[in-house]
Figure 1 (tube, rainbow, N blue to C red):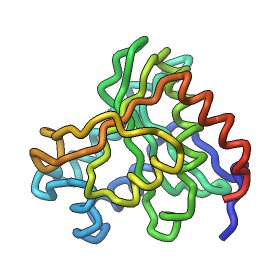
Figure 2: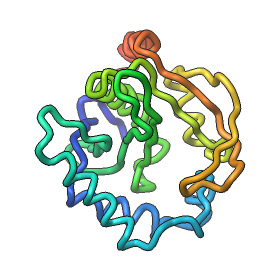
Figure 3: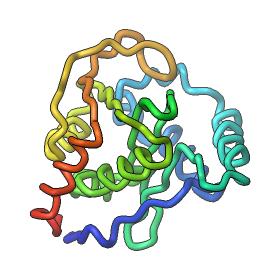
Amino acid sequence: MEIHPSQITLRDFCEHDITHVVEYWYRSPRNFIESRGVDIAKLPPEEKFFDAHRAVIERNKDANPSKMTSLTLELSGKPIGLHLVNAVEEGKKADFHAHIWFEEYRGKGIAFHSYLKAFQVFFDRFSLQEIHLNTPISNVAGNRAIDKIGIPVIDKVELHGTILRDGTLANHRIVTRELLNKMLHNSRDHQTI
C-alpha cells in the first residue's frame, strides 16, 4: 500500500467517531492494548467512556475557533485513528497521544506525516511552546514511529494514573516549534510512504 501525504487529513473529532474509539479500547486484542502499557482493569465501563467523549464534543461545539483536543485521523476520507492532547496548559505545553484504530493501517508509515500535521494544529490551536510524548517502552511500534519522525528521547519516566499500569516505564520526548520546523523540512524528502 503506497500512501501519499495528501491522503492523510485531520479534522475535529465528532460524535460518529466515538464508536471507533470504543471499539479500539474494548474490542482490540487484549495483548495489543496491554502492550501499550494499559491496565485493562482501569478502563471505565463502555457507557461511561462513550459519555466522556460525547462531553468533550459538547464542550467544544460552540467554540470559535475550535478548542477541540482530539483530532480524527483520516486516510482518503476514511476515519482510521485519533490524535489528541490532554493536560493542556494553554500557551505552554500539552501531552500528545495517538492511536490507529484498525490493524491494517498500523506500521504503514502514516504516523510520519500525521503526527507532524497534528503537532501543527495543536501548537497553533493552544499557542503551545512544547508538546510532550510519554510512550511506554513496551509500545515498540509507537517508539519506532516516533524515532523515524526524529523526536529524540530526553529521559525515561515512570507513568502513574489514568488507565496505565502504575510504574509503566516510558520514553519521554518533547517537541518544540523549532524541532517541528526541522521535522517538517526533513519530511519534504519523504513525500511517499
